[in-house]
Image 1 (tube, rainbow, N blue to C red):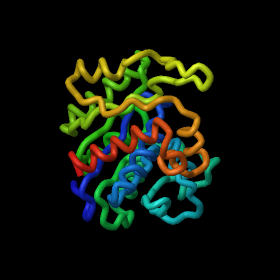
Image 2: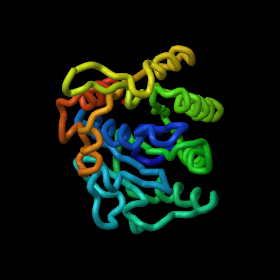
Image 3: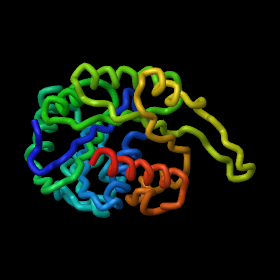
Image 4: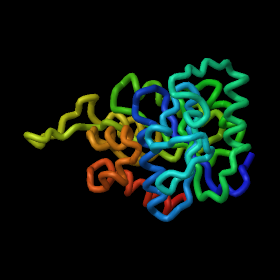
Length: 245
């Protein structure tokens, strides 16, 4: 069902963990806010929430307002060292509370950072709100692409539009030789997008600034707006603003 005063809800998803989905969520949300949109993030990774670190959140205010983005994360409600070992029903209840009980105010877009996989949390989000679309994140690796296909299938089966695919860690440019290295394979996401007939929205390189921004509580699009990854996120936000929001 629609959530009052939120115009669009976009899930950021992956079939596999460790592909940088939360980094993509944080920077795409921040870049969209820099486009002048009112933006929120729901950190729906109940077992490994990371938005608290990525946005430098402190205290237990939910949602918190950081760098112009509203953020609601389990990291604000429980100690960082606590293992959240919950079965499906409790996980579903928490997701519904975060979606429907948080005072989001008026938002142009709410990004939902999903955990990896196709389980309870994904189904709870799909059933608990009307998703405007999903953006899939993967790396060029064959194993990551295989799991990404399963995630795409879940959204297809539940009638959630796939807005496109983002390839993270697409390549690395050496500081010394300036040669581009394809550490995890080359153009895997591009080939997958062509095969499935969905847009390839962008290819994010491996850069220290992307990692450092997340660890320092300041997304790279703010901390280092001129790095290659930040420029890609800026173009993604422009596209989202013009074509979807």
